[in-house]
Figure (cartoon, rainbow, N blue to C red):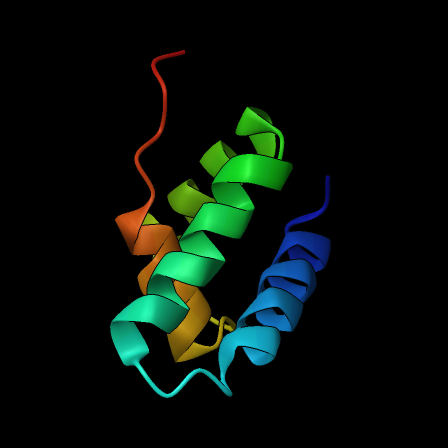
Length: 73
């Protein structure tokens, strides 16, 4: 999948959680959504992108992707 699409999707999820008053809960909400509903290959691709800087991701999405624990390949 194109990284631009993954960025847009992650940002959409982060936008949903921006109304959450507790920041840690918002980060966990984004992370949990990515873990539950995204294919492992999509998570790996986005995690690698964040490792390289993550330009274009909203701060909440960036933080949630940083918190992802990826399964072994």
